[in-house]
Image (cartoon, rainbow, N blue to C red; front, top):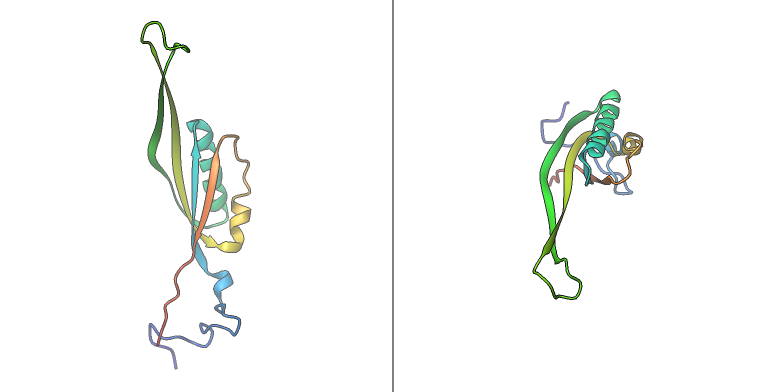
Length: 135
């Protein structure tokens, strides 16, 4: 007998420890968020991550370009407050990219073992697929 779609088989039932039987090999969505002030360095790291994941045969989406954050500060040039009202305007731009992979959790470390340029911040999130609960 084959199970109907939506029914559990013995291999899918949770073990006594609470972990699912084939969970270690299941592919999960891995979201890597990269941010930097320098676009060239950011694009280099994105390309390295994407190439390494594609070499291993994983599905890759991205890099998706998020809106650039503009942090602005306006200050008076004169330290004492006297003199003409002249102002300095400083601006810092933060560029952000998102790369999504579909890979097993155990392979995340090998994919992200890329030379990361200085000034690039990497945030890795593993989005576990929800298991369906049956009555």
